[in-house]
Amino acid sequence: MRMLVVLFLALASMATAPARAADPLVADLSKHLVAITTGFAGTDVLLFGAVDGEGEVVVVVRGPSKAEIIRRKDRQAGIWINSGNAQVEAAPSFYRVASTRPLTEIAPTAVLDRHQIGLDHLDLSIDTSDSGADQATYRDALMRLKQKKGLYGEKVEQIGFMSHRLFRTELHFPANVPVGTYLVEVYLMQDGDVVSAQTTPLVISKIGIGADVFDFAHQQAAAYGLIAIALAAAAGWLAAVAFKK
Amino acid sequence: MQIYLPIAEMSVNVFLILGLGGGVGLMSGLFGVGGGFLMTPLLIFLGIPPAVSVGTEAAQIVASSVSGVLAHWRRGNVDIKMGLILTAGGFVGSFGGVELFKWLRGLGQVDLVIALCYVVFLGIVGGLMFVESVQSLVKSKRMTESGAGRKKLHQHTWIHGLPFKVRFRRSKLYISAVLPLSLGLLVGVLAAIMGVGGGFIMVPAMIYLLGMPTSVVVGTSLFQIIFVTANSTFLHATRNFTVDIVLALLLLLGGVIGAQVGAKMSVRLKGEQLRVLLAIIVLAVCAKLGVDLITTPEEMFTLGAGGKH
Image 1 (cartoon, chains in turn cyan, green):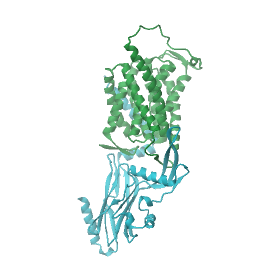
Image 2 (spheres, chains in turn cyan, green):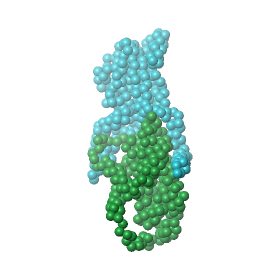
Image 3 (tube, chains in turn cyan, green):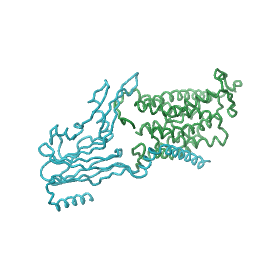
Image 4 (cartoon, helix red, strand yellow):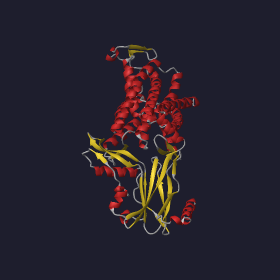
């Protein structure tokens, strides 16, 4: 319900600003900060907006890029051992695409490549000296593993048009979502090319006790270690005293 | 109810973790073992990163050893001198173990080494325990044929020719300090790598290798485990940042209650039966890990954070 109100407000503000009528694409998120608290179990963020005129809408959500290492197991002396690996210089930690129509019907490969829209069009530099598997195999493995963790979308999600101008889609973020500044890119496509684009940042951040514990454990590791030992010893002693009989 | 683990960086079900702590606590109360050898593999099965499982389990073992040693301490069943020498060796060992762990983690082989250590040591200890307890079960059925001659306290071997002999009054031993020192060191390394207290190796080694009387073995072992696992907790926290205090506290809570229930249940079971049961559990964990190593995995690839962690 609240979402609808927001939607109407967005519409109203568009209606009251006829001076900027030239904007063919307007979009926003229902929230710009996702807080990972102690009880965090994933969340949905609503993306909504409006287009002026014809066209298809594509939304790409990108998490901050990170270096990854992919390891490949091989049988050696009867047991399975990590035998080869590949380094990925910078892979998005999170990646999801939503669209009003299948990507192949909207734009040619060159355009999708240029804007890195879709898993097949991500520009990844994969470096390996493994003779047992090539770059393409490692690339497939990366996609598969990330999808299994729920960090890369399994498929392009559907964006619904309400009337001809309004669109909305739910962006899902699972419980294991990495923290950082995300970019939500909204593209308006016409005749196989991008005619308008808008990028909105979304911050995913740990908040509260969990965040404090994490920061403390990394910045004051020695103190954290000592506290962990003291807590454990105290708990053990308490248990022994409490159940003495 | 989900709770977010700040260091493991994932959500888990609170009741699942409490239940796990309770279940393993029950075992440890029932059999008088620490339970680290069960807990660490189970945490890994649940999807907690192996490094976090090992680091966190070290903290939990500190708690269960403190709670276990108090009863032995009251009865005077702790050989402090022996315990301190074992601890000295254990400290050096856990330093080495945590460094080794860090190095293996960088190579991407830490999971393999953890699994191999488990298979080898659980296999040996579980196998010996099984054979020995089945034999004694059979013997006790045939009734005792009266004490067959007076047994020597222990056999004299080359071990007793080693230098730096020390008198251990409580253990009624006069042996070289090199022995407990190196035993402590070896178990310290294993404890740091495997995320266990090492009692399941330490206790048989104390009985068969050092020749300590069984009455002081468990208390002394627990005594040194406290310090050695405290050291590896500290090292894992400062070198690898892998001690999850929230996870440790949840496991503790379940473990404390489970251990008390287990201790009450153990009174109703016979010693030999308990040992056979424990041997079967140890061998089952060993077999599960062993089978995982040799069967073709469904997924050949794994993902690790690149560069410096």
